Amino acid sequence: MVDDLYKALADPTRRAILDELTERSGQTLFEICSRLSVRRQFDMSRQAVSQHLAVLEAAGLVETRREGRYKFHDLNTEPLRHIAERWIRADGPEGNP
Image 1 (tube, rainbow, N blue to C red):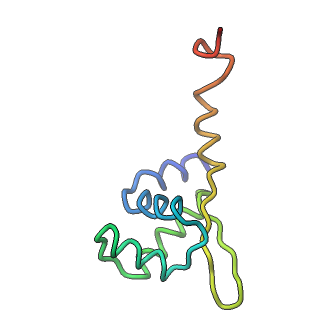
Image 2: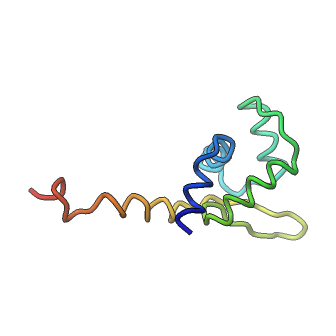
């Protein structure tokens, strides 16, 4: 799963999607596409954005939920905490008083 996480973060488009979800979690595909187009001048099809979201979901960075016929995408920062905790530990040299 760690490899999936690094793969997901390596792509600038996926990082832009994460940035948008950081600002406002719980967006539909249409909302994400609109924000990418207007705010970041990304000219991408809905299918392309959907594929990027699938990679982010596989890495655990995005969670989806359905409400009626709408599918909402939420940011999940837990996998990022695991990366930070992997190399930054309180018992390491920088954690000593």
